[in-house]
Length: 325
Image 1: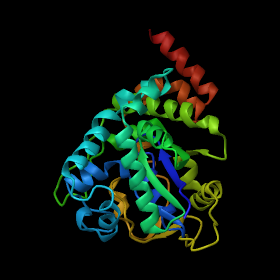
Image 2: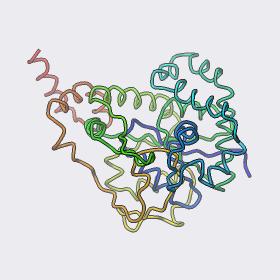
Image 3: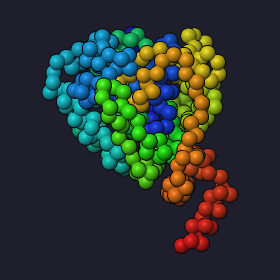
Image 4: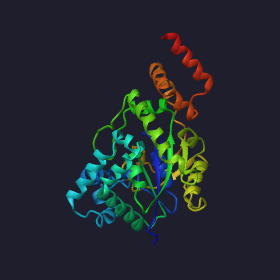
């Protein structure tokens, strides 16, 4: 078995469709869907939330076999990994990734963390016998640390979605299905969501776009839902996996999902059976006009960059803003 671990990292700000993409990719032979594996220490081992297979993670046979050689019953090590994931790789650490020399300082202070991650991904590869580990942890900081581990061969799918749709999704209540209680996922205001949308997406591009199409794909959610089968096959081509074997697609837009061993993610990770992939445009009617205008004014250049705002509309918006000043 090669020491190189091929990881397909799905990066992007939350509520951009990363969970369903992860689930679909994990249905193919040779790929293992792990969801947001960065949360395995806190949500998985310490809180014992549900694995995607429906079993509490500490009781899941697959994850038990993976984790025993990595941390065993070493509570201090588990808490160390949870602490550094939650406190050393946050959005506030993103500037360290792009400032000269700062990224190296972040890496150097996390040697033990990186060594344990390398062991974790090696065990995932070994126990699953997969060619590619699909990780939708999303965070640019976590992806940066993965990319710094010598035996991890990182491929990046950068998933973006219209920031107005994203903001609307963040203000909707979503029930947590992995805690066995009527708790809801944390939300963000439209301003918060747009700030992080700008910060995360610009950083992800700065870190990985330079690697070229052999290692980086920019995927808009809107393009994905229009042609889920075609875009999925494009991703598989990038990582060198045959698209002909065991396709989960019933037709171009319908996929048959089996349970996965996802650690964390959107509640849709528990979806099984035939699922139709279709656009979710509810925000166009239900997001209030003030929020739409606010988000657009904050994110104009990046929205144009990703094709969500054409130049004519951009000029009209600027004229209206200037006239009302």
